[in-house]
Amino acid sequence: MVMARATKMGLATALAAVGLTGCADVEDAGPGSALRAAGETVEFWNFRPNDPGNGDVDLLDDGDDDGLPDTINWEATTGGSGNTDVFDPTGSLVVSTVENQIFDAAGNLQCTAYLEGGLYKLREGLDGPVLLTATEGRYVFWDDVQSLPEPGTYAWYSLLSHDLGYEFYGDVIYDGPRWSAEVIGHASVHVHKANPMRKLLFAALHEGACGTAPSGQ
Image 1 (cartoon, rainbow, N blue to C red):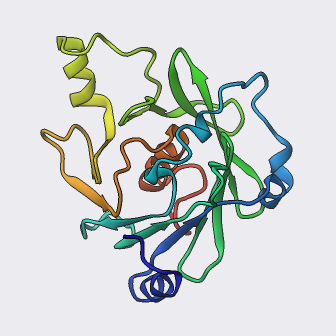
Image 2 (image 1 turned 120 degrees about the vertical axis):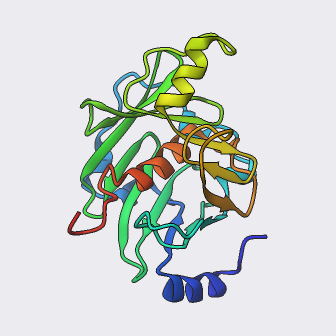
């Protein structure tokens, strides 16, 4: 069960938690919010809006030394906007997602995700290099994956073994394929059906990409 707001605030102070909460309006993202992906028609940031993984979620880190806080709080507005804000332990805004884009606290565009060839590519800026590639399912790969091999083939297992960054499986998140990777987080609800944009944001947080890296890094 997701903790009440007062409890979350206490954890944020004690554990240096990062909070994520939904944006009510596009204007909240600042001046950069006017930028949009030209011709984008597939609202992948709003897939399955009623799924628990797209609502309020507490993510508990496994406690390893990866630079992330022990607790990451995800919150989203009801009504299925698909948008998310990320706050530091002081309550200051770090980054926001508005539809298919990630903005920093000043409203500057950091990354844009596009549907390309059936996969979801997170690009630097508006149309820069691909940083992460997500599927509609439970996988987020590093870099630019052009296409997925046939499941069960050697090429498929090779891709999972060498290029899979994160696998979302039930309420567990793995640093790679679940059969060989370490658990890097536990969620308060199942997150494997969370929309691709939320999964890309989570991966960006772990990668320190799209303006999410702590100051000094």
